[in-house]
Length: 441
Image 1 (tube, helix red, strand yellow):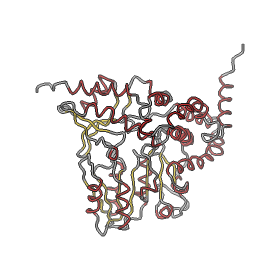
Image 2 (tube, helix red, strand yellow):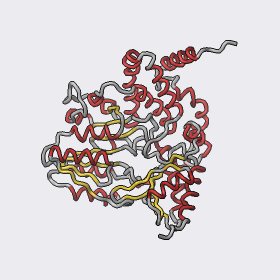
Image 3 (cartoon, rainbow, N blue to C red):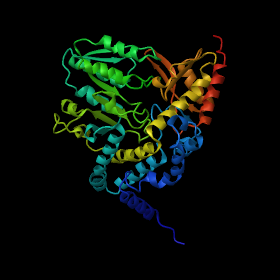
Image 4 (cartoon, one colour):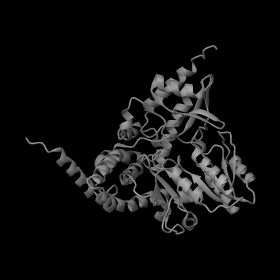
């Protein structure tokens, strides 16, 4: 029996990929891979509240199996940095890359470039916004810096952020201060805080007649504190002050719509909880504010009100961009609220089992309004580097060591592909390490 050639198989795959109409057609890769298997499971959990569904392990096992990372002998608990993608997202990325390389100038510019609008539409649907307020870019840093460098701020204008904001945005604001004389003030919080009003009041007290903008991190990436963004925005709006929100760790995880926050600008990465390809991000700007922001790079209409002026970066990876579509299919099939509650359940599952161990300290609230998936932990007598190193050396658990301003902890971030057995392994590791006496000096 004659076997088809590799070239024939590749051509057949590319033709199939091209003819499906992309991620949002009836023949999407997600539909082909999961529609049948997920239908029965979805029908069952649809009868449950999102909180009840958190403990349906049969349902979550089905989702775990869709991630190749779930079978790795290295336990990835640094999904707050970047998340592995489901297999269908990886297949889409690989398939689009192969399609492009059949003839980049044709397949890239004349086919895949036309698919950006469909991705924009679906991102806008998830975000609860108009597509004309969504720009697709490479990460939260690019999105946020577009606004930071694009705002028409003058000498003496004041911006208020915090010491706990992400380093790239802190550095960007400091550059604006050095370059343009913008006054950049940073508040200092000691987390966890279980009082929204205390946070809102701290920003309110810092406002002066020169304050033009508040920079708010929706979820503090170091240890997972959820900031009361909506309340801060309500306060700021009464005073005519704009708000820029860093949503790198909230979009695709917390159940919200961007306009409901009340902010003016919002930037996020899509390769964290949305599980899109690495190097994908999104910028949202309120429609009436677009014309007032200069593009980070260049555009023929820099003062125009078309959100696409922020996408003029020259040749990009169209394959990565189109891979967002399958990530959206995957996410939507689970549902944002169900995902949020499951990941919060996973965080609490391990954290509640170690919080009372002698010497173990949690740096994150376990109450739902104040945290979701990220939790910081430390052990008395161990440096953060030692704890992170021992978790990997002895238990093959990948985490993130955090030493930033007044925060020192190991950041633990599960995802939907994380199993309870995985977290039992983490609990065992923390328990045993907490019982190890420091060597006498």
